[in-house]
Amino acid sequence: MGIIIRQSIISTTLTYLGVIIGYINILILFPKYMSPEQVGLQRTFQDAALLLVPFVQIGVSQLTLKYFPKYKNKAYYSEFVTIILAFFLIAALIFSSFYLFFEREISLYFATNSAEINQYLGLIFGLSILLALHQVLVAFTQSSLNIILPIFLKEVILRALTLIDIILFATNTISFNLFIYLLAGAYFLSFIALLIYLISTKTISLSFKIEHFKKSILKEMVVYSLFTFLGASGILIIGKVDSIMVSSMLGLHENGIYATAFYIAVLIELPKRAIAQIGTPIISKAYKENNAKEIKSIYAKSSINNLIIGSLLYVGIWINLDNIFALIPNSHYYIIGKWVVLIVGTGKLIDMAAGLNGEIIAMSKNYKVNTYLIVLLTAFTIYANYLLIPLYGLEGAAIGSAIAIFLYNFSKFLFLLIKERLQPFSFQTIKVLFIGSFCLIVGLNIPQLMNIYFDILIRSTVVTVMFGALVLLMKPSAEVNSLVSQIWNRIFRTK
Image 1: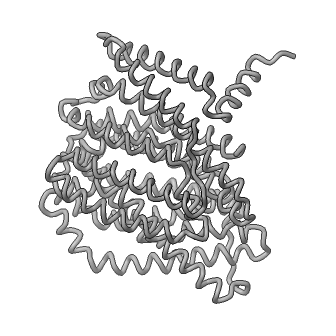
Image 2: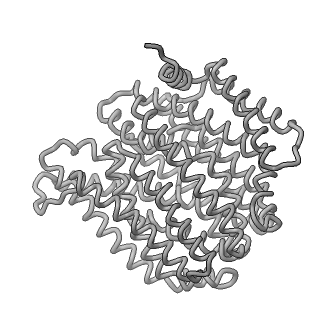
Image 3: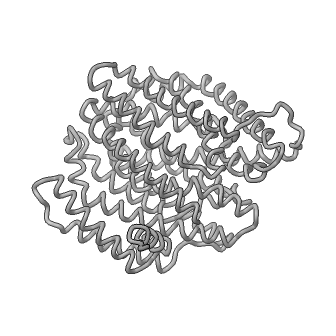
């Protein structure tokens, strides 16, 4: 768990540096200089491309994570890389054929309430292929146990380039149309930087002879790729379909509000992304070595540590929610997304508490179960949104998202409990829930100060200190206490 903790700390620091830049972009500059329709359009543009990514690569990135430990030290490693990239090329060609064939139907889906998005369908197509290949490169980097560079590129560089983009738009240097194209260009620059790194470190090298891979192995890889494709597509659909359906059913204006509120809530789950990226290849290696003890340890530790971080963030957002919306320019548009933050935030907290359940199933011999669960829940999510969005609007989309997250994690929890006899919860989980609930009650009952900034500072400081003190005193996580002890000793150590 040591390497997970170390890289997670660095990557989480980078992630939250990106959060600061993202806060400036999404909660200040976008609302100030763009209409809600423009905010919704640029968000729909990105979400649509991201939603297509699994359909482009058809599970190739998960295939890389699964088989990399088996071939990384082999003399014919370059053959493995070549096969992976060849699989991607074939998958991308298949996707391209289907996309071009159904492009008219896609445009009709947005024609009624979000027709403006149709002028960017070609760019969405190109960006989806670029992002899919980028995801495959990230899988190689993760498998080498280096998550810092891809996180730095995604969370910091990409958002910094977006900041420059929005400043150019705000100063009337560029049009909104050019803003969208430069946004796509930022993704391209991030991709190029990662590609250069992988080539320079020889993590990617090609072979023009495939001699060590029998047809049976290739068939096994194809089957795994297809099953994980269904799983990966389902995960993205569950995470992005609400935004796409809000645009289609309610309009770009409403999606601008929904996307802004969703961004606030998604801050809760960011630490899990870092832990999952470095934890996945370690879980894969543990399965390769039949190390059940290591898998059990990672499952339990990821759950409790995610819950601690997630609870603090959830409480912090809730007690400051009115202040957060008050600071957003043109807040009278966006305040109606307040309940979206709390509903989606609850779903994200559940996801944090569940630990690396999906990653454990995906790397095991039972990986197909993950796919079956995701396919069922994808259908449920789409159906729930069709029912709930017309009834409850933005809150309906949030409820559908939260329910899907809960059901997905509960299903994985039951499977691992019954099949693998694994479960991540203990009395320590109850301690964290108590600490979070207590701090939430205290934070909500702190008298409101007139100055918003001072109120945020006082309210957040009181709750953070109280939360941290209770975590250290009640010791729900040995890793947290050990980390604090190490930091303390480094700062105050005596010669």
